[in-house]
Length: 408
Image (cartoon, rainbow, N blue to C red; front, top):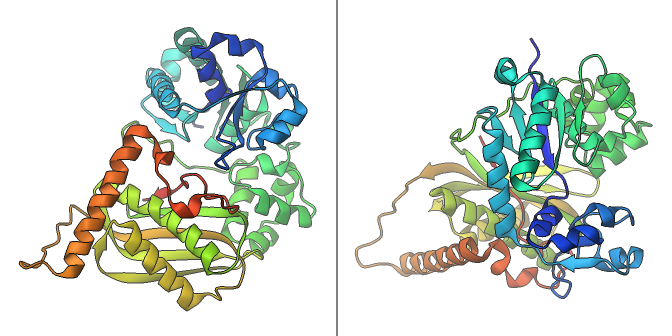
């Protein structure tokens, strides 16, 4: 029996939440944007009126203003977005306990066990949309399918405030004509590699030779080929499901290729800051640091180094990462992507300091106090309330707090 998976995507989430606080914004072209002076001047979200002018998320403010001079810009309020994200996910939990957030405005739901209570997948999707709209004033689009990948395609297929059902009977008709970049995890690099093979649509990818795709894109190519054919057995997590992190990592493809030690250090510091902050948040330390480097030709290497003691400090992680890179990479060679990962995780590690306290011990304790103080400020005022000096006025894309992931 097939599963019934929903992907719920709140429409223009940031802009919609802002309109709840300022209703007059609903009637004008409006966008939420970052701070122009601090190189955060990109469009984070836009409403439907702004969309009609061709304004796109992630384009610069000056580009958006050229398209629509009367565009109203609003600063982001992340506390509001977090509040409404939690409210909406609680609504989802009324229909199933299998809710897996995918970012602040998207979630997967496995409603297979709820069909006898609420009707078909399409019925449940419509009930969720009605409930969210009546209780919060927000709208969402929902994709319904037999796996997570196709359900996400469904939520993107028709917007705003719509339900799209992609079944085994109609998926070729709906999915196959879509550009391959619409497929989950088919980023720009993968899409360009497929284009060089003459593959532009999901249907062409589905009908292609899997071995050829694997040969060109590696394991991810094989995964994308499966996705195009509707093969995806990945489960939807259960609400509040505890995960034991085996590693904590943060990676980034930079806006331009890094070249030279200053560029590399800026990237490493930003990523190490993310990893260290998450380790402290989870009450963990790592025994090993791993660095993954990818060049513009997608050649990738991974190297790791064991630490002398477990740590959750940015400086120790970044210093180790720089040592790894110096030993394994030509510093002047271009770098497209970096990932820093803390591995061999330990929980609740309490280090026995020397009775007299060595200089190293005291330096560690001092640094730990500073970084924990930064955590406190960020938790109160947002992650970007304090950031590294290397993040200021750079053009590599680390002017905001980098993303990251924890691996099971």
